[in-house]
Amino acid sequence: MQAKRLIHDWDHPVNALVVGATGGIGLALVRQMLDAPQVERLFAVARTTSSNPDLLMLAVQHAGRLTLLDCDIREEAALAHLASSIKASVPALHLVINTAGILHEGARMPEKSLASVTLAGLQHAFAINAFAPILLAKALLPLLRHTEPAIFASLSARVGSISDNRTGGWYGYRAAKAAQNQLLKTLALELTRLNRRSIVVALHPGTTDTALSRPFQANVAAGKLFTADFSAAALLQVLAQRSPADSGGFYAWDGSTIGW
Ligand SMILES: NC(=O)c1ccc[n+]([C@@H]2O[C@H](COP(=O)([O-])OP(=O)(O)OC[C@H]3O[C@@H](n4cnc5c(N)ncnc54)[C@H](OP(=O)(O)O)[C@@H]3O)[C@@H](O)[C@H]2O)c1
Image (cartoon, rainbow, N blue to C red; front, side, top):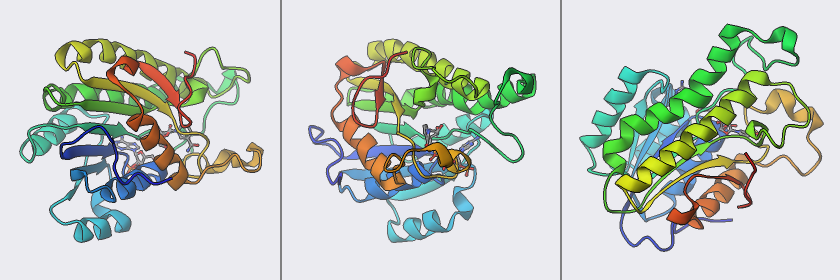
């Protein structure tokens, strides 16, 4: 699957932003978006873009087109600084894809049972998987509020679907992604009023071979573990097929709708 022209019915140059650009899916999105001549400017954001060898090489190859910005998107002051840096370069953003998310970090693993649920663990999961995406949207609002098309997509997860929860466990991650979905739906309704060509969506990338899923891949059926390149291409395809009428939806990598 190739995404040479990212959004086929957009005929203007695209200013885009990928958050989580050092991650498996985020880096694949950055590469594929740089392959699209339609993308005039691309901002790649994560906490560690400035020390990521792949991004540093891409920034040299695409000098003037790719900008690396370090930002911890859980921090409101850092988000304000990020937004003003972007505003200094471009008047508007057309495509924002947030892939930042955490399932495990250091010794912190998702809860297998109620006994391992802690306030600190829940706050950790919510800070990045629920609160950060909506704070990102708030910081970027002046760049999304215009008369051109604007997509704000954020990676959720099928395990955040309450109706699809059949196995339990992973309390914090599941609940944080469910909360993100509600925050995005609410954003979709408000952004429609500020930019009638806006599209806000939550996306499920499918189980993808990245650092996030690596400790949990043993139970994934053969052929069901996607490469990051496959997921990124599929997600770009899903976005290309959306219209403002789809804003507020929760979509899987194959374009199907996921129940809340
Ligand atoms: N992989 C899967 O199977 C799967 C399945 C369903 C949903 N998802 C979702 O898909 C998204 C991408 O996952 P992935 O597999 O690509 O994960 P990944 O490889 O672990 O990448 C996560 C990215 O998030 C960034 N990040 C984490 N905390 C951040 C913060 N505070 N501020 C800014 N950036 C931050 C990381 O960069 P730095 O460390 O440099 O900040 C990294 O770029 C996540 O939201 C995940 O929940 C993944």
